[in-house]
Image (tube, rainbow, N blue to C red):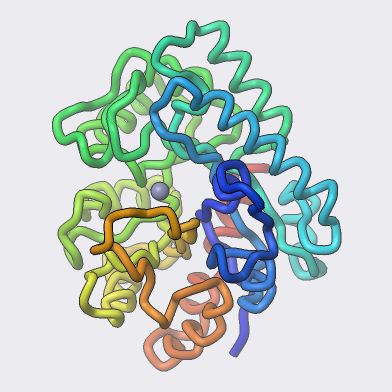
Amino acid sequence: MKFPISDMHCDLLSYLARIPGANPYAKDDIACAVPWLHAGGVRMQILAIYTDVKSESMDLAARQAVIFDELCQKHKDDFTLIDTDFLQNWEKQNCIGIKASVENAAGFGNESANWDDIYNQFDFILGKVKSLAYISLTHHTENRFGGGNYTKGIGLKEDGKKLLDYMAGKQIPVDLSHSSDLLAEGILNHIDSNKLDIAVIASHSNFRTIWNHPRNLTDEFAKEIIHRGGIIGVNFLRAFLDPEVPERLFDHIFHGFQIGGEKSICFGADYFYTKDFEDSSRHPFYFPLVENAGKYPSLIESLKDKLTGEDLENLAYRNALTFFRKIQS
Ligand SMILES: [Zn+2]
């Protein structure tokens, strides 16, 4: 059984922007290199524009937006933009469809930027990449917009509200994958009380019920995303699954189905450049069963006795495809 694959999160762009000599075909460098994506049958790959909270975050984000545009222009045999035409003619696609996203709104505005600069930066990035699959307000840490997933007790700030107001109606979902619980709550409340047109997703997050980690979703937030018609991408990082038990990946997937997410659950593998990561406890970052994007067919194979054909197809690509068709229509 082989399905096309949709994956909601990888960090190919920040690897290409940061690492000297980086190239998108380097299989030994990054688990979402082009040969791995082809081997895995990936048809839809979201590429995150990732930045830390740093003074140079806006430059780094702009550079990644330019690199995204270049991937579309210079590698036409491998990549094509996920636009309305791509989504409508899904069955005819042979290339890897790509769409950018923003992981950390520090890429729109560092801590000292004024709002004219932030709006300009937002418009520049959106102009380069054409559409955004989602925006995550934070990463691990706090920024001017709100509290990241390791900042318990810091929620949505005034600048975060202002950014949500600017995103509304632009067909850009907000991503809760790197929100503190208080930020997630603040985002949902702000959307509801101002009736903002913003879909809510978790692009690369697992479930706290299965593995208790601040990067994973509580059932309350997961159900809120499901209830709103959003998607949840299961993350392949060992640290967020259960560092000792590879098969815990299956438990996270099953849990997504069990809490009513049969139309929401998808993949959010989170492949990134791991070689400059100092924390030795994180190595290896992935269990062998999902160590690179070429493993999707064998992962699907090992799930085929555990899920119905329809559920498996929804997980592999259809839930994400349906979501983006809905967003872009
Ligand atoms: Zn992330």
